[in-house]
Length: 625
Image (tube, rainbow, N blue to C red; front, top):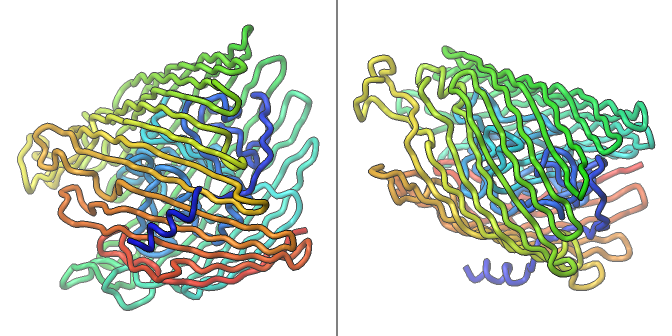
């Protein structure tokens, strides 16, 4: 603990380069490399100063400085995020926001929703992301279903793939005999912005099972591209595409003991996603129309439990903004989505039609917005949501903000239509409250932000086992079924800060306190904390850049104690992980880099029964032209 406190006291805030802080208007710019532009607040780009909702954006320079393919090393720098991983790199990795489950956090990549319709809870597995193909990560914390609809109960994460102006490549080796190679190429000019990036990861890995002896390896190919072509001054054509293919070794429950142990099982992953559209902007009117598709397929060859799972969604959508007199603007949108899943022996499909509107006042010092959304789902019916927020700059660079947002999560197709399904399920609902104060922007020489929040949830979906209870539905669902029951509350606060200590020396800290409670009357777990939601989390960093090409940095991640199960009987101990890194620019085009992760070889657990990686060293080189 003394070691943790020492590093926490040293690292004042999260490190990142000091981006230029110009504040553009609400015109549609390239948001991939602009950390002061948010799209999660309204669905269209606007200055981050003009939203009362808490948003954090990490750009490409910071992602590159952290090094490595593992996206969770970046996500640790976002306030309020928790993640679980069932083993090493490539294993199922889920991210939650402010105590919400992963299925209650909406994830988009290049504007395409990637939460898997075939998963029981509709989560997005972030193991399919490679940091080398990511340009920026934007996280809005708190419910925002007015703009985004289902699954935006805990927050919205928007990821943009890489857009390089030129050619670059990198390769690194280390850890568990892991090789990572990344390449990117693109062009940016007055008419055309186009880029393609690819990443290859091959790792020998380590045993997924904590008591196992054999290595569980991982291999992944990841390629993404996006483009925008300006046909006229007012009209642009846009498109993006992404393909992921991977294979990961798994451990399981082999006979005759059926306890978690080494197996020869593997899982193959294939993901396709993309969007084509058109962007019109002229005379105070912005229209962004498109068609998006995503398909996620998993095939497991475990001899005891083989499976084939496929989830697919297709979506037509329109987002728009009309600038009105007197600093007012109307944001609006409409969409229709077709989803289907196959998880043998179960399958099903559904459709959803939605529409929303937001009216906003955007003054020089004051911004106020409020809006409403309507969703009509072919299986469970309709749903209304409301949200409002405001921000006031009461002194130069000082802002206070507040927001109220409603969120909902439609029952997944598996929860509705599988052999455990219940057609009578209602959507999960949440109401979120947030207030905060900030000075400057993230990356400024001096930056500070404090946020307090509370989220109340109801109609949470749980599983009823017919082996431990009786219910009329057990007549047709003998093994059990999903049902609405649970109530929950998550509340706490978050602190972000950064300071330029000296020329070239920047330090920072992100701290989150989240208290979760099961508030379901009469439930056996009433009053318990939710599983794998630590109350305390902090990430601190410090970075130094010299005038002769040398850069040095260090990170620490401190995670407090948590319960591994809903019954609060299995405890996960607190832990602290430290990384150190360095890079040296040999020339204008060549850079050497390296790092050591988990420098004091901490033995820690984030999911009971699963291994985590010990100390690991990596070296690599980058080329840019």
